[in-house]
Length: 169
Image (tube, rainbow, N blue to C red):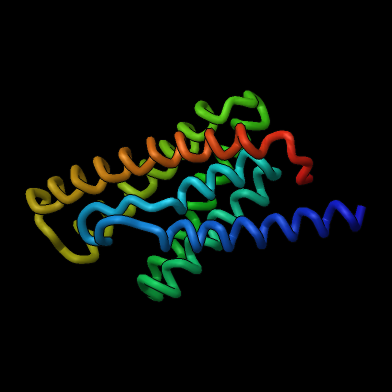
């Protein structure tokens, strides 16, 4: 029992670090379009670990990236929650379907919905932007998120197929 707990803790730490590193490998800027490998690592964690552990690694790794390289404000907590949901959701679906594409898509869709809601609330109510200004921002961010999601699903599926026969847990 202790051996399994140690393995799971070690894998969570490993994937937390991979999410931070993957998020740091990017093209673009935070304000417009940013393609990165962090989501790929969130999904890969969901395919290789229990769902709850994958959610923790995804959320904490993404939050740590925000704190270390982007922002240390309250949005870090939102990142923790939204990325947890992505990793956890993908993990639950993967456990049931054993299909990385379906699980990755489900996790990414859950994340994009939450990210869109967060962006809308932030721009519309916290920054008091007019709806006419918010909608083009949402369109750009959703478009970028969809492109990033497709790339993450492809990359994580390929990596999973390479690593699936390795006994991790």
